[in-house]
Picture 1: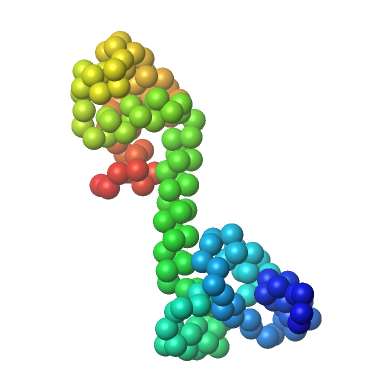
Picture 2 (picture 1 turned 45 degrees about the vertical axis):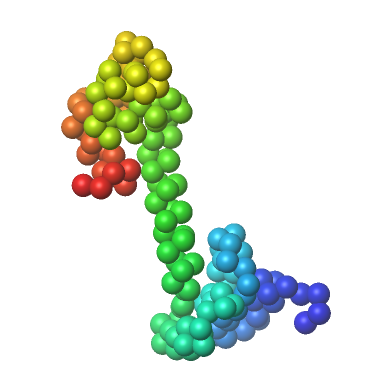
Length: 155
């Protein structure tokens, strides 16, 4: 339909014919377009430039399971989610406190952190105290476990 974009067309098809499954084939690799397509009711999402085999897999997956997501798109979304999760886990901390946490998790001592950040050792200790208080932690071991659960470091 002239003047109607793929997202709006998907929305209309989904609304009028809910049993029809729409697979979006697009040049858009951005997450925002993907999210809009899924919200509009798309059952599949394939980026143009994908192989013919990939398109066939999408059609078969939608037919069998009702949904298909481009593997590269899915990987990007998962990676983005993990980054957001890490940021949220330490979101209550100031930028400097997050820097200190990162250096602590690298295994640096208070003195090494002070030298690296060009601040006094007392300031590092104050940052550590604020970090523990804000995250409601009582020991460095708890900070390590917190960071592992948040995905900030590997176990």
